[in-house]
Length: 607
Image 1 (tube, rainbow, N blue to C red):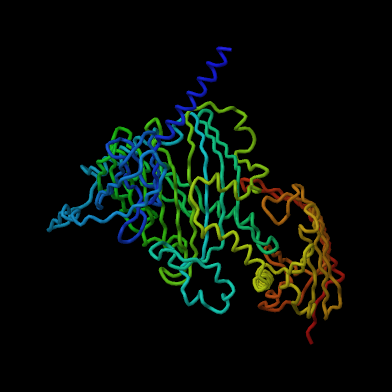
Image 2 (tube, helix red, strand yellow):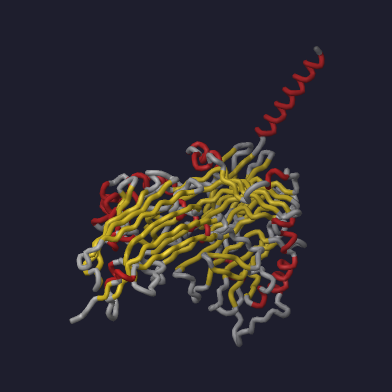
């Protein structure tokens, strides 16, 4: 029995020691802001007094500081602001928000030199020498320098109509939709009033291997605003936003932003395109951090401008960055762009990306008028470096979505989000659901869909396109047509399309019939397509004309220059196979037979 008592005693002692250690743990978190402007401050140094335990605030001014021992005081230090010391409760978990006051004395250190302006040059420029060291050490600081890496990633994307005026918001047409509008700090991109229209979240586990080079992403949870699929292609919209807002890797030579390629400020050839200046040194932390400001040599080039933070040691690692684009360039109607990157040190002393945030505002006017704001924030946590990864992880597709990823409930997201989400942002899910149940909105969507898509949805069948119901030409005279197609509500495997047309002048009937079989059990109107289609058509055709993107009986094509007095009656037999891949490669195989009845060719005679 003694071994059993000894085992129980060891378990109890271990438990007591763990509880005691946890009881002494001090955890402090909160947000740091400017006391005057109320804006959040990134890269503020936060330390427990008389210790080397410290951190920096992220791009949103938030911080979390943990010590295994009791701590009674915490300090906040930021260049240009007064250092703040605050007493805290030892051995407790607490939140502590701080407002830093600008230090006017910092202005005394600025020296203004009159006379001829010095010409910028790379030679003997300490800022350029520093950035060259950063470039030289890129490979050792990149995440790909490890043999294996695994981490969890949380992504949040939000899109809104921006810069909405009070006058526009209070219009009579929006009387029933006031719950949709949200207010924000007017100093931020997008203006005071926003009208959020879309939000999506994604949680994924990522695995990387250096040798052999492999990567795998397993999406364990995804959530997005769901619009009525009869009017909006939710999957297509999600795919479009994912392609427009891509991951930002500052260590790459080129960074893709809004489908445009920009040269990174630490690209191999960056010193030839950017000007660099040392603007600050944060000496109260180890290693010291040097702030480098950069700007394009030519303000019309597609280049960034902003600040980058680098360690002043033998690694020259990037610890943070904040930058945008020069206002002189024309970037697809982009009115404003802001990118923030935050890195955290691991137990090996290397820095890995902990959060990235991309905020862009689009609009026709430079500053005035309603625009469109998109924000994508990505948080990275639970890094594991150089750990053995089984080969089975990398089997199959590089990106896998778990079967229940889209079915996660609110409790799952509350527990697993790696970043905070505001109450206003959470409201967007419910607001859109409420909006779609309003009778006035349903009527509006039907009208809009009819005008732009050309189809009126009736459930399993939709009629259209409406712009072909009426047309005219010199041979058929007034041409009347009616038709439509089945929808996925009838079947996800089988689809049918048809129309019947009649010419008042030639007094002849025309028709079309097609049957389509979906090979991947998905809608043939969604990506990726994979189907077989067989069709027969008896109709008129202008000899030698082959339209690719519109139908010949489109109402707008009734208005033609010159004389259109000859048509052929034709019978078309078609068999098509369409295949699209996830990488957007596709091919189309088809067989087409056309029979023209020259004996029935019509020639309009003029007297």
